[in-house]
Length: 177
Image (cartoon, rainbow, N blue to C red; front, side, top):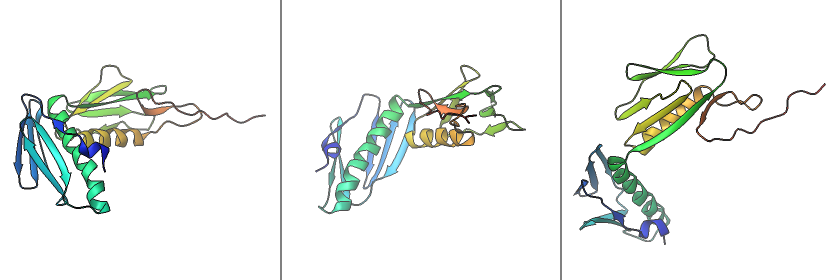
C-alpha cells in the first residue's frame, strides 16, 4: 500500500480541475498544466478533493499510484504558488545578468554563456551572484537549475562554481610538500 497514494489532494479556491478520461487539466491564477495519467491509475474528483487509486494489484500499479498522486499534487501547487530554485555563483569574476528574457553567465570561460528561458519559466537576478528560477512546472524548473549548475559545477579544491543555495561542497586538501 502506498502511504503517499492514499492521501487525498486538497484543491484550493481559484483552481479548476478538468478530468477527461485519463487526461487531467489544472487551471489556476499562475497558469495551466495538463497531464495524461497512466491507464493503471484511476483519478476521481469529488467536491474539493482529488483521490487517486490503482486499478490492479501488480507492482507497476503500486509504483504508479504514489507517483501519479505526487505529480497531480505538484500541478495543483504549481498553478497556485509556483516553484522556485535558487542558485549561487561562487568565484572571482563569476556573475549573472539578465539579457532580455535570457540569462547571461560569466563563469570564467573565454565567452559569456547565454541560457534562454523556456516557456513558463522566468529568471530573477537579485544580486550578480544569485539566480532565482521561477515557474509553475516543478520538473522544468528543477531540470533547468540542474543544467545551469552543470555548466560549471563546484570544484572540490576552491569550491568555485555554480551551486544550489545552501549546498555544502566537500572540500579536498591540496598538495602537500
